[in-house]
Length: 258
Image (cartoon, rainbow, N blue to C red; front, top):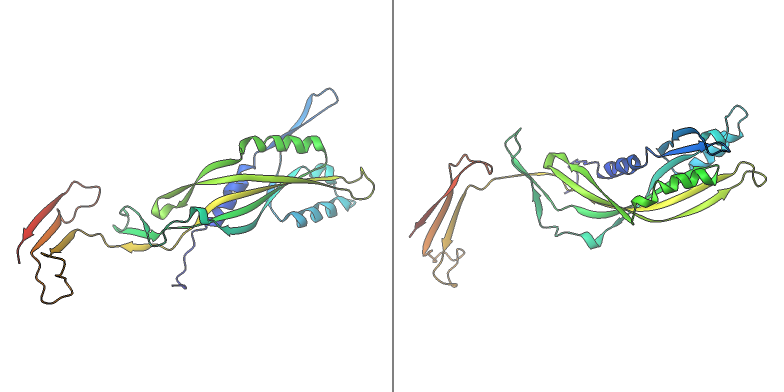
């Protein structure tokens, strides 16, 4: 069962979609008369929160560094866990079938995907409360409490899926480096859960175009019994035999007695 390499990049695609949600958040800085003096996009990258905070603080301590005031605000995100989603499980014995492939003329199938919940943290780093709140107000209204997006999961099978990104909550923290007011770092962490799926490998499907059915006279007869003889034989055949599922075709029906 194991050993045949396949990789659909399911988790990677969800990571990319999640980060892309927050890559165009903007904040404004104003003067004492509330005139906008600067508008800029908040940068975002995938990084672990604890290591990111250490990096920000170390950068601020360097004499040649422009300091936290110029570096912030920023956003970072990271995957924090995966958990099986038993509520969305599907029968494992059933499968998804693709239409006939135009390139090789074959049809394909894969067994039903396995549902999981991916946990994601989005961290916000700011020097001022006002800038932090500007970012918060551009995030929270879109999650009530979840946001639905469509991703192209398996292009080879023509599979697209609506994933649900839910905002579960958030917490805040303020770190001071030295005296209160010096080197203040405001950190907001949003906890998200994302309903996603992991997929099996693809298998080629043989298209059935002819069916032969043996009909027995009573329940005591059986194809396993060598003495049983079917009462009639029904044959159904696609006409023309070369037809695809999107072509015009008929089913030839033939009933015979043995």
